[in-house]
Image (cartoon, rainbow, N blue to C red; front, top):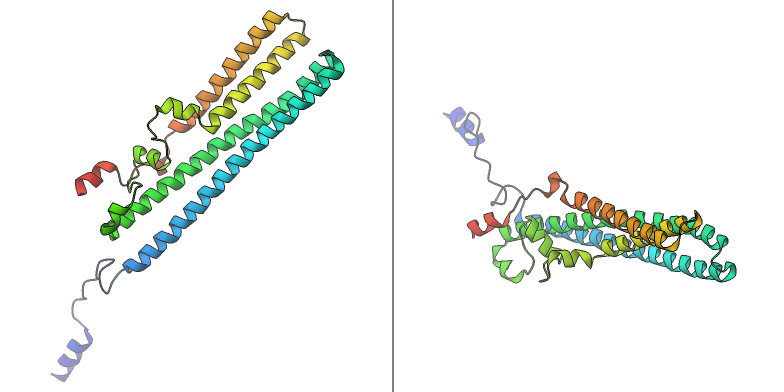
Length: 245
């Protein structure tokens, strides 16, 4: 009897007690610690997004400063050479460098925008976790706690009541793309004049080059924006939140 009592007291030979579910009393991670971890990640995403925005502004500012300096240099050379061969050769040397900086700036802005969207997606998912663990705070949030495409665009400030083409046209990458196309058109026109083409043919070449470069940049940006990425697959779509509510 004493052996049986000692066995029962120590739990030897008995079935193990069920493990409490996460978040319940006595098992899993406490809700307060979960909220602390989520809050830390939220601030980390905010800092990362701020760095991406700062780099975007810096790269765009560097390109515009380079373009302004190149225009001033071209004006000085034009006055000294009376728009002769020296001016055209100088333009054909400096403008491709400016165009290269513009194209790389456009690519970098696209990468920064992708990173910005990824951080917004992560913050939307963190808000979903907040709403699950502390549902009483939901009425006080203005940003969504869902990660579908519409909710992500909204959190990025892209649903401001204007048609989407106008919103995209007013964006930084669109501005840089138009300037790149203008620079490419100018290079084409100056090269044509240097090869002996008349003014009408040079203007036609400039327009054709502008259109081709602008279309190429637009197609590249559209392909990158629509490219399928596994991390963008919604985990908390708006439909499921409405059903749960």
